[in-house]
Structures are given as structure tokens and as C-alpha cells.
Image (cartoon, rainbow, N blue to C red; front, side, top):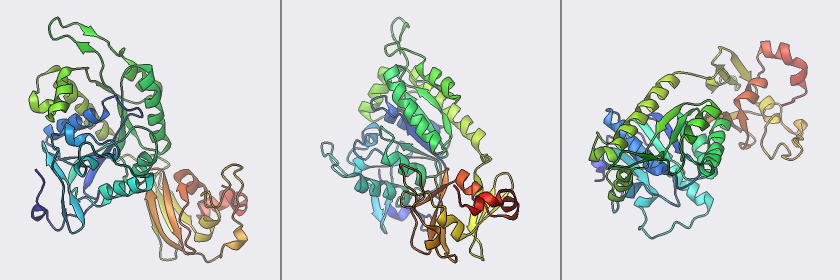
Length: 386
């Protein structure tokens, strides 16, 4: 059933402001059961007493309406905002709620990204303990957009045990590492088939690959989910495994993984990397003021930041040579705005209209113009080297 518009408090803001934890569920490769893991993990987290949402970010191949048994449901729209469908206690949105089963989404990437932005900022998600992002295969536009816009708490990598899946899953893990999203861990799906008659286990897709991958990257191993007909039937019927039974092998495995996820989030809570800013603001004097986790108070002028812009318009991507002439930048150029880009950088809008540069936290720290940094790196800063 959809949630009536009148039941939503007008004080609830659209977007992600009320979401405590945003968890990306990724695989890199399709066909490893990532969406099935995402829906069942959402229900398992809900069973612990949490409020849970699920964003189906696979615009071209959405599967959550079928997995959650909500085919035919449509979100309510009120005051220009979407109200998610609620199924099995999970609030979710999906492109599949707006199309027929056999209707392909034939959109170019920019249009698909607009839908992702709508799902992020134009949905009345309300107060959630967890919002799970069911990502499409690959490491492209959707993943990068979500990493920049959603302030992801952590990512879970789903893989099957065989090397062909592990090879692609490694790429997905590295992508999140590069954009500074913490890895909550690896889940090995389809990990062995246990005969219901004799109890013998058969490693149809090999076994242990997910565990070895977690060790290789020194990230947590969240557990294994079996290749179980019950999990397959839950997707066919739109009834999650835990809504069928809590005592089956599959249900116990899912609950175990959910417990590991909660423990991992607890360890991450309140933790800032040493090179990650706690806050930043534009001061009354127009300078960017940054407070770092180690207590350092960074100071940045508009001119210094503008001439050091790392975007492709200001730096040749092939040679790394700076193409922007500092003499063409006004000394009194102003900062019109600054915003965090995911967990790895800051985007800045200047009074000359330029706004395409993303300043990584490492670059921002090197560009600091506080008295201590100016004394220590004065000669380097005078050359505007980045």
C-alpha cells in the first residue's frame, strides 16, 4: 500500500536530512543476487526494530518492486514530492513503480541522473535509521552521483565465490575506496548448496572467494548466504525470506549478516578520518574556514582557491599543466558557496561563475593559508603548486 499524502507531517523535509545511515549495496557485476540481498537485508534490519528505506538506483533494470511484491503500486505525489511505497515495513522507491513490466527505460545518462537526483532530494523519506541504496552493476554515473550527493555511511560489496565475479567486485570495492566511502564489508552470496534431504553441501560456484577478497583488502567479512531455493522463491513471490520463516538456514544467515552490518556501523559512528574536515563555512570576511578532525583550523581565500582549481577547464588532463593564468583571476574574487562532495572533497562556487572544481580533502589541506601553514610552506604556496 502507498502512504497517503495526508499522513505525512508537513514538518518532514524531503531528501535525506532525516536519514541516520546510508548504505550502498554494490557488486560491480550483475547476476550475483545483489538486489535480493538488499531487499532481504532491509527486512532483517527492520526486524531489529529499525526504520528502513530502500532506494532502487538501477534505473534501467529495476527489480525491487518484484522482490518486494509491489508490482502495480505507485508512489503518491504531493506538493511536487514523491512519497515512497511501503511494503513489508520497508519504504522504497524504484523506477519500476513507474513503468510496466515489459517497458524498457530508453534514456541517455543525463536523464537517468535526473531521476537519481529526484529519488535523493525529491522523496519524503522521513526519519530513517537506515537507507539502503541498491546500485546497478558497474562503476559509472549512478555510483559516482550517489557517492557525491548522498553522504554514504558505508558500502557493502556483494559477490559470488567464483573468480569471474570476484574480479569485477574488486573494481567496485576500489571505486568506493577512491571516493573515500568506508567499506562495511563483503558478503559472499550463493555460497554453497545444502541438500535438504541428506544435508550434504555442494559448492556449485566454489566457496570462500568472498572471504579471501575481504582478507585481500583488509575489510570485514560480513558472512555467506547459501544458494537456497527458499531465497529464490522469496523473490518470485515477492515475500522476503524472513516473512516466511525465521528458523530456516537462509533466514539465519541473513539475520547473521544484518547483525554484522549493525556492528560495523557502530564502529564507524562518530569516527572521522584524520584528513577529513569536521566542518567548513564561509566566514564574515569571505574566506573559507575549515575545521579538521585533528583540530587544525584551515583558512582559504577565494583567490588562492580559484587559481588552484583542479578541474579539466583549469588543468590539462593529459599533461597536468595548469592552463589557467593566475593573472587573469581578480585578487578580490569571492566565494559564493561551498558544499561537501561525498566523503572526499568540497565543491566551490566563485563570483566569476566557475563551479566545476572538486577540491579533494588532501588538496584543500595543502592549500591552507593559515599563519602556521604559510610560515611552513610559504615558498611553495607562492608558486601556487598543487
